[in-house]
Amino acid sequence: MLWSALEKFSVQGIQFILGIALARLLLPSDYGLIGMLAIFIAISQWFTDSGFSTALIQKNNRTNVDFSTVFYFNVGVSVIIYIVLFTAAPLISKFYNQAELTLLTRVLSLNIIISAFSIIQNTKLTIDLDFRSIAVSNFIAVVFSGVIGILVAYSGRGVWSLVFQSISRAVILAIILWSLSKWKPKLIFSRYSFRVLFKFGSRLLAAGMIATVLRNIYSIMIGKFFTSAQLGYFTRAKDFTDLTSDTITSILSKVTFPVLAELQDDNERLVSAYRKLVRMSAFVIFPLMGLLAVIADPFIRVLLTEKWIEVVPLLQLLCIARVLTPVSTLNMNILNVIGRSDLFLKIDVLKIPLIIGTLIITIPFGVKAIVFGHIFSTFFSYLINTYYPSKLFNYGFAAQMIDIGGVILSTFIMISAVYTLIHFLAYDILKLTLGIPFGIIIYLLIARLTRSQELSELTVSLKTIIRRK
Image (cartoon, rainbow, N blue to C red; front, top):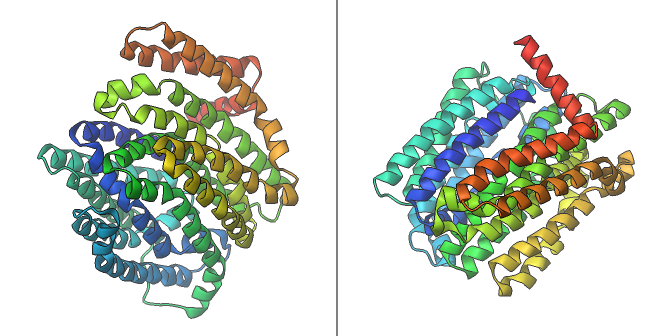
């Protein structure tokens, strides 16, 4: 967990700094153009993997034949997808009425093929719980690719700086993972292995496709019915919330799945670990998202300048929408841990009419209304995600709210305290430099006074790690 956290926060931290530099050099419309292609790249990556990585992690008696089979599948599918996107590029450009998207699609889609070559290497390291190697690889890749992106942006290439940054990161990451991983593919493709893994992975593919479409459908609709600049504002706001919410979610998903998979035959220990993870994720993510929402205005003014000020209300609303994402994801992942990818798929299907319906209703009222609808659908989706955990483990919505109720209350107290403080400060830089540490201190103080079990566990874990070093 430590190495995965170091990887995500260091990588996201570097991306945050580099992103600030790029945002000052680029226009909102540049980010909007890339945002229009996000769903096509995301769907393509899901097709390339097709749930096989998760299937390999979940399978206890995996063999080298399994790994080689999946490797050749990943590469083969990535090539086919690239050809499809290359051919469809003019249609994508026509859909958004943006002529630049034809060439952008054809170049950016190269990422799909490049990334396919490192999927198994990353999966092997995950199975071995070698998150240190993954952390080092991602850190190096994001630093060098970020520098490349800034240099291209500084030369006046606009949106192409984001394209070159993305492609160079995929190339560097693939090279490093291949050098660190001891595994190399053998010239073998087993139909039996493919069928066994696909039986589990196909449901994850379908669920992943649904989740990816629903997650990116907001960008599609904003890009279609509004300007590229408005999509750029939404994309930047989404990037900042992803920096916190998705980072925590990624850490939990990446680390806990292989660990919980080892406990799948011991129901009592599995549920105990599951509950602990729900409490810990809420303990970390709730105050982070709350603090980001309350300092959003000075945060954007200081770091991105006034040209990005329209990001502020969207960022605040998205913080509310994404606060339950890590906990919600844990409720879904536990189904994969016990091999019930069929239920995982069923839940995602149930959420389709909710999200689509909310989006259709809110589109005529503008981007802010769309995000309000996103808040509603996100919280209702969380209720749906807790249904099967309630049935299978007697740990549904009510039990989870009891477990994290103290965290919710502590977060509201912290937000109120920070809001009061920055209200009396005149300068944005003071609001940031004083508001952030003040909020952290208040939250930790409340946790200490209420004898928070999560704070105690974090403290003990950190002391143990320090002693080992």
